[in-house]
Image (cartoon, rainbow, N blue to C red; front, top):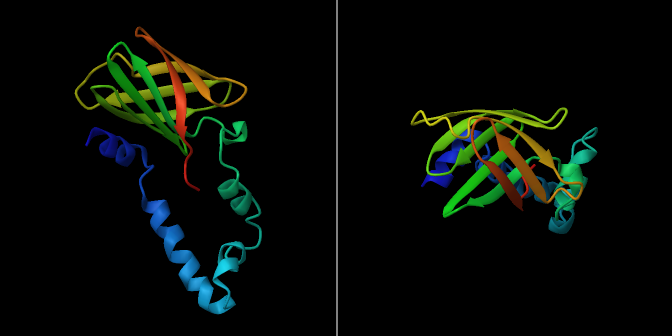
Length: 151
């Protein structure tokens, strides 16, 4: 339940998936070839769309956007980052924003008023698979990427 809420708070819900499911059937009858609907549905000037959807698998070009998981003692900490919004669950439900200029900067507000993981700086490894966040006045979490954002 908390993970679902974190995804809703961060703006990384399944809404994008529903739009993607609607697009191919609409373009499939026009092309007459369902296998080519995905390649034909890209709009002119949207050259990044097909590449982004096919380039999955720890590609560091994805930056910090995605779903991250860390374990701190017996507590699992999940961080969801996408389009400048951040959601975190760790026994607390927190949401806010991030910036990825000059490293990762996180600013969160927890619904229950907790302050342990509300402000922090992070660093992404070169391969894009590990993110270390040092929380101001709190712990340091080492996250592993568990998923990429849907485009």
